[in-house]
Image: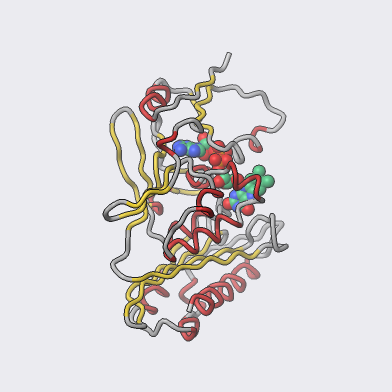
Length: 276
Ligand SMILES: Cc1cc2nc3c(=O)[nH]c(=O)nc-3n(C[C@H](O)[C@H](O)[C@H](O)COP(=O)(O)OP(=O)(O)OC[C@H]3O[C@@H](n4cnc5c(N)ncnc54)[C@H](O)[C@@H]3O)c2cc1C
């Protein structure tokens, strides 16, 4: 008979995980749809009662987003413009009911190529904090998601938080999603950017595109090109197809690979134009 645990403390949760044979359950909005019509066969660790995994806190050098923080909590949190892109992404995760229960770490651990939170968090240069009874380690997000439905999570580990470094300058951010309709849709392409700026010039740029490769990708060639440029609508003029060559879009029921390529280029241009 599978066991169900719903501890109130992280330490208890890590002890349950250390015993093995256990699946983490947060909001369940990816967990349950993947098991429709099947009886649950393994032990469940429900992390929704752990208060320490909820909420967004400002620390000295970074922001800490608790792993079980819901998308609605991200939307409602008082945060600087650095997080505008993540908030826009949060509004695109399903409808309000899904946002009320779906969590930030759940979106990352499910590792879907179309996860809306991933490009926004890549643009934020986020890291993932992983806890186990053996200790805590941190991984940059791009090292955590290894492929579709594959992460670097080791047996016995729980994602405890997502960490976002504080930039040294003012920062703006944005997120755009293209789907086959306006709302409640799986992304064909989504893009997010963070621009750190000083005296009207770009100090650092991070741009990420999702749903166009097995894992959402940053665009390093474009980012390098944007450095030092005027932070205004002309930023979009620096975008060219070669900078998006790191993307490997596939054709599926939602779009052809060629359409995705074109759409990604247009979305990134719009993203930069709208940001300024
Ligand atoms: C109708 C519907 C619409 C949706 N629309 C979108 C959409 O538009 N965009 C989008 O990106 N997603 C969408 N989703 C997917 C889903 O809502 C999100 O990915 C959500 O963020 C998942 O979070 P969760 O807390 O529900 O995860 P869960 O379902 O609880 O867990 C997902 C996976 O992550 C693991 N996990 C969860 N938390 C942790 C943790 N702290 N440590 C280790 N492992 C963990 C679980 O074991 C499981 O494998 C949709 C889902 C539904 C049902």
